Image (cartoon, rainbow, N blue to C red; front, top):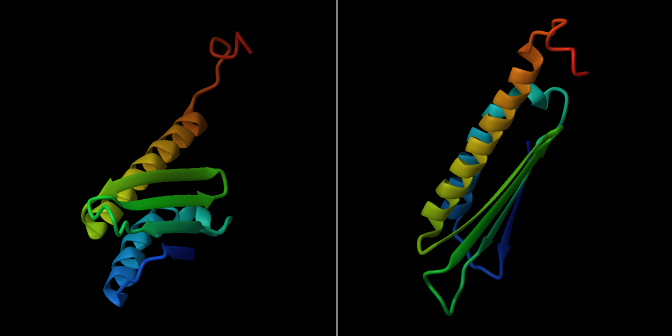
Length: 116
């Protein structure tokens, strides 16, 4: 998994970097089946506001093959914002995988193919 974390003008600790990478492994585990065919690219943007301490912004974009997901969160706690963004992206990926699996398992009969 290719992970790119951007800290926009933000001093950060190794703990924050480690926390973000651990959370992104959850996303990687969901996409590991597709990883054999397509590389996984994840971009995590962290932006801490110095003037407005309650507005830390986190954005996550994930792309692997035909699966694409992105989420944005603003929170006073950077760790909670990272957790929330990862949860949102995981939900999107699960929905996309369910939708794809449903299409593959659809039974084609004369009746269902009538409109095609």
